[in-house]
Amino acid sequence: MDFPRIETLSDVAPHVSYERGFVVARRGDHTVVDYVHTVSDTFTDAISLECRGLKFDRDGRLIGRPFHKFFNLGERQPVEAVDWSAPHRIHAKLDGSMIHPVLLDGALRFMTRMGETEQSARALRHAGAPEFDISRHLVEAGITPIFEFTAPENRIVLAYDRPQWTLLAAREMVSGLYLPHGEIERLAGRFGVALVEDHGTVDDAAAFVARVRAATGIEGYVLAFEDGHRLKLKTEAYVLRHKALSLVAFEKNVLGWICAGSVDDIVPLLPEAVADRVLDYRDQIGRGVAARAAEIEGFVAAHRDLPRKEFAARAVATFDPRLRGLAFSVLDGKDGRTLLLDLLAAASQSEPRVSAVRDLFGMHWSLQGLSLPDLEA
Image (tube, rainbow, N blue to C red; front, side, top):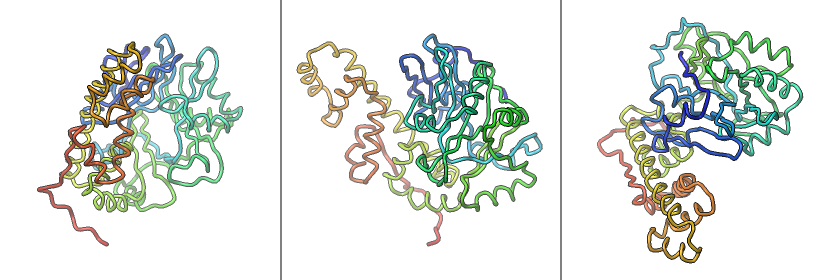
């Protein structure tokens, strides 16, 4: 797999836009490039696949390159189309928070995809000398180590009995190349850090998929190919498919998947025609959010120097009552797109709430003309 060479923010910024789902978030002494929602053309080129938590310093130089965007097995190509003869390993997929270090002003800082967050702060409280030492060793060599932090208090779905940092992989920042698994094993042993479990290779793809999807008590596996290509396979696919098909008739559920960023996990479980409807609806939401955010941010930019009372009067005259409060929040420094997605997430709690905001975003959900498969009780 070929990865694009990235050295500075200018190598990335011209290729991303919010309309395609990306944000360039400036944090004072660093900048984060990440995706916050997905539409049909979000991941259509090599640069876009890298925009999953890239970090740049205040001068725009790359300082952190975690995992590229990779997909569920079967999401973009049939299972039988995968070249299983290519060198690869099966790694455990952990259910925690991805953490990686960067070096800023000589100091190690630990971040999630969106930078320093509550999750990274929680993980940092459980980091020891091994994690700090291997992080500095690799970052100073231009390599980003990628960890997963799991803990009882950091539960996503699965429960873990103790806090744990686990080394998953490491990437050369500029080239994007992944260090060979043998080198990762050597580094983990040298520095005394926990290494992700290795489960060999896939001999029988159909049997492997069936076994994993029927498994319990684990999230699944990542298929890590020697050339850097990766795929993920999660458990309980049949249970999830049943649940997805039972929920998809209600607009609030589909909207909730979009707000939670779960569509990519749901789509492979749906019949193709239904999946296409979900993706089209996601595109509607993306376009609507982008349009409303542009209106609000443009208004604030044009009127931010007015006295607050006059700003309020103009906001009342300009915006739908449901959006006026957002104009003030943007004036106070909050991100308009995030506020709009929060509004939609709140609306997804019930069908009447969805109906109450549908016109703001040009949303329309329908399964008319489609026949869903019969579901077992």
